[in-house]
Length: 212
Image (cartoon, rainbow, N blue to C red; front, side, top):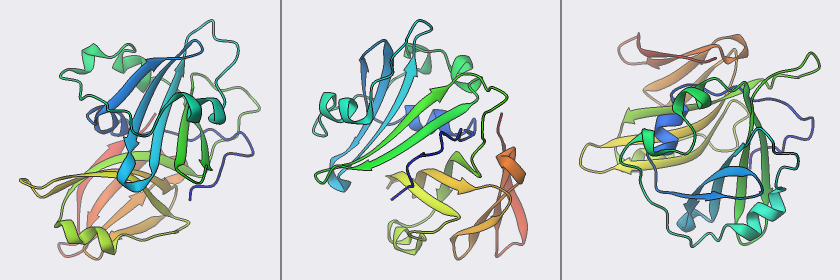
């Protein structure tokens, strides 16, 4: 379980997170002056909700209110085009990060990402970053992913069986190198400004990703 954001930390978000999150089947609703995007994973008993408030929003919905409003059995839809989003992709990429809350309600685990549009002088930056990643692997490789690891937490994944590709949403610790699979690791720079996918067998960098 991801630690709840008790210290009001801002978690940076990789640009690669957004297209992978919004390519999933989402329930999109306007609730309490916020655009809310809910990813239901009924088989895992988990919901991930991204909350993007309007400019005039003065009272964000609480985790409990969101849990009651969004039923985990709700069927989402896949967007054909990111331009169909009620929020532009450029707006999403320009946010400072998210406040992350994680609560277990017994019948479901709820991960809520509250958009933070700008930082203040008192803002504290978390030592982890939200990232999206696609890797080639077999379905059984999921069993090799680390669990309850302080450096890496796979929040959600989607498997494309025909292409043998995993689409991963992760929380990765900044300034460290962590193992995703025996043949694959992720190296992040300090404060998560950049991270690299590193192939162990070839001893080379496979790709790099940038973060605001």
